[in-house]
Length: 92
Image (cartoon, rainbow, N blue to C red; front, top):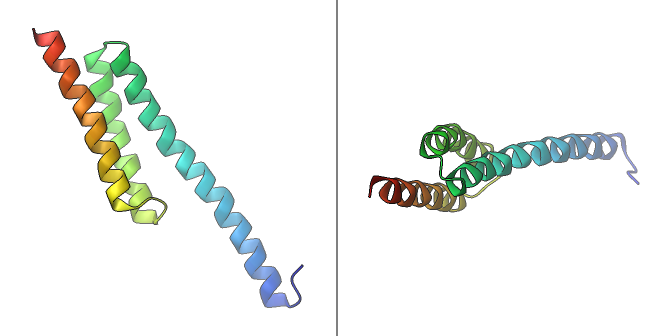
């Protein structure tokens, strides 16, 4: 338990930030899952539109400091790789 007013306030602020961070990270994971699900379903147009929505969400998590930039780049790269494979298979 906090002993000073300052410590009480910092505890409140930390809890608010924690809740907000959980919400933001959940948004990012959901956006990624939507791309994966539509790619696995074989729907290229939907997958591409979901990817276009997911990229800014992932980038905003980097700007907020919730995700390392390399992790964000890795997610975007893997999603893009899925879309390329899907477009290759649907083209042939």
